[in-house]
Amino acid sequence: MPLTRTVRTASSEVEQQVAEYFSLLSEPMRLHLLDLLRDGEKCVQELVAATHTSQANVSKHLKLLWQAGILTRRSAGTSAYYRVEDEEIYRLWQFACCRIAARVERQARQLRVFREKQQGVIALQK
Image (cartoon, rainbow, N blue to C red; front, side, top):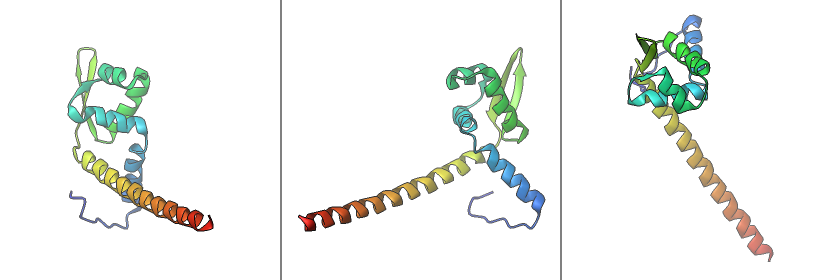
């Protein structure tokens, strides 16, 4: 679904599901895992090594993303491999990054204007 399309609903069930989806993405470790999986499928051990955290922690986050349908999982021997099933997640990610960058740029401009005004006041006082 394109990001420009607006979906309106009165269903509290849908609103709850959307809240849960965003809640999944509010955890930095899950975002880090998604970023690592951007280039393709990886086994749990690769993700553990890349994140410098425990297998239990990585597996917990992967399981939540898998249950939400964002990831797919396959087993090969004793290893589990994950890949991103819903590539649209990266469009949502890019949208959020662009919005944050725009806000930071706006705040930086406001800070520069404030500093320039303060410097002008200080110069006038001398």
